[in-house]
Length: 260
Image 1: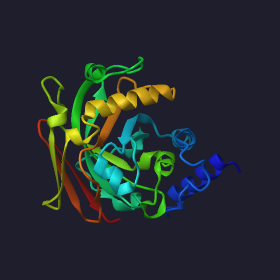
Image 2: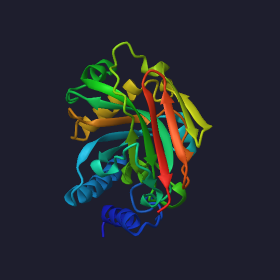
Image 3: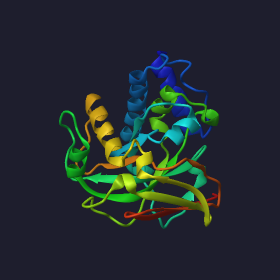
Image 4: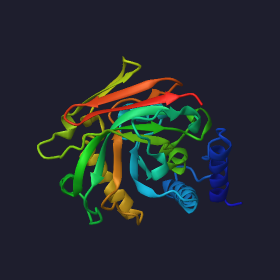
């Protein structure tokens, strides 16, 4: 098999068999993000062929503390599918995941396409219908989270599941960079952060995504949900735990995890 085929098979098998695999950087060209995105696209195509529907994108590795946790130094993006969305009022069966961690984010829901050249923060703001507090449950098919930038991109930017809050907030008069986030685990403080910790501002992060996605021939479209990146460090998820994140000016979001 080609290197790309080997990486696809390794990651797909890990997901199906519920067993983490070895990194794929040993078969893909070193630092070749374009080839890693080709692997990601092929894996997403398999899932959509099986019935899943593309509902947006996620931005990964926007927070320097998360970059330090994983040993990478640049952002990336993945695809959100409808079967990754979890309602707040239903506990998530933790066996759906392999090595889950959680992070609080601001989600954007677009009212217009972002497909022009040189997309700016102002363009993102104009295209946004509303923002909402979100929890991204990140996961890795690669054993021990032993990842490089190539590994995480190929693995759909280490995507798992996501949860959106109930409050839909207009961007009018809202300073996302100044937003403060606190996240509790079982009622105890777990992590904190600000909008400025996400590439300077979540608007800047989405602008980066819009320009990068357009360059890859898959621009952001009206109706897309965009997870704009972590506001604070990731926290490990354990069975029977509950997480609540509160973001000033935007609202709160909660998720609980159950055993099977």
